Length: 340
Ligand code: SF4
Image (cartoon, rainbow, N blue to C red; front, side, top):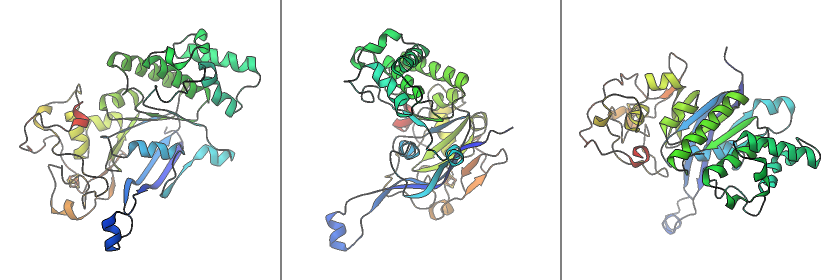
């Protein structure tokens, strides 16, 4: 049985206005804007982890910050079903990429972890709050004696454990993880991913996991959304998306990702750079890099299509992606964001 929806995002866009340039003023053109997120429809079900993957600059972090309420959407809406029912704002916590800047260096760990408990009034009395902080620190693999230390006394991986303890302290109905391991050393990344995976299993968290790394979402996510230039171009279950991607960009990302179990990947690199989000290509935004592009793709934006398995994709065609046309580019011509 499918779990009920927790978050419903409807036709959401975020446009960042840019100041009018001298040329704009001279020609009388209005201020232009960058549509960082463009007409996104998304639902996240209670208890699931939705992975959102894409290259740097594709809009995934902007979408995350909009969901967290840190920035307002320009168009469209998002609603938490739980808060509609209870009338109170949802408890959303966010874990950021950089554990160095996301913790207040002047606060002791005890105060950092206790802050969401106090804000949401989840415990009362100093002793009760202190007990809860100790419990959370031990839960993430730290010691209760660490509560009296400051962030600079910890390594990057330990600081990310503190960020996780702080997020859990708020007993989040929804957790946003924005590239939580990408600033860490490789060996530490695996430890943090293991911790997050076991917390997901134990606490049945509902979360949005953002990353540029397909191998990470393969481990962490139940469903996966693929973003390209502000749009979700494909969304499907983890198994379905890796077994039978329906969008050429998804297929190319899988082929280009290091360590993914795919055949023949060295022959089909992603051609070209990510276009300027301030001036996205006409028609299908992916047509400048797509090996299947036709004249229709250059002039007409593809609608969102529902796949037989329930996933969605934005492409004019129902393509057989088992054999990609040869792009004629050298095998090492990979986009840097996916070749890392
Ligand atoms: Fe490629 Fe055309 Fe499909 Fe866009 S609509 S992904 S350019 S085939």
